[in-house]
Image (cartoon, rainbow, N blue to C red; front, side, top):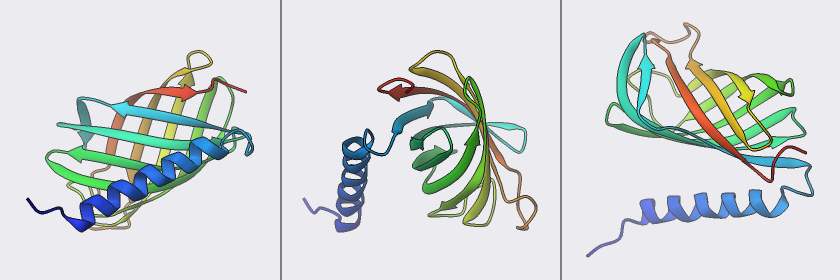
Length: 156
């Protein structure tokens, strides 16, 4: 049985980053948020089966940096996202995402990211996320998903 170096390396790098985030979260006045969109997503107004996992570090309720792993319509992809967020109970965010591969929703690796989040309590949240190239690529149907998230350590 052979082990793919690329897949093993990717997993090790992801685990290392997650470990660093959890290790330094308290000193950086930050919180780790894991969100999932488990079943259906919308691409250009059409339902597409798939799932997405989003792991972000929320720094002082102002900035978020994280990774996104998704399987959208059978296409596996990963991205790195940075966004500015405002609000406390209800939060809005705007930022950019770099995706490893193009998707069925767009033919670009850079997209804009928009999010609306409702912090139900100190730990649980519901978020609507939207990614789009804002018309800067020839194919841009956008990607929307409703996510459920958990905030480790609760709100500070």
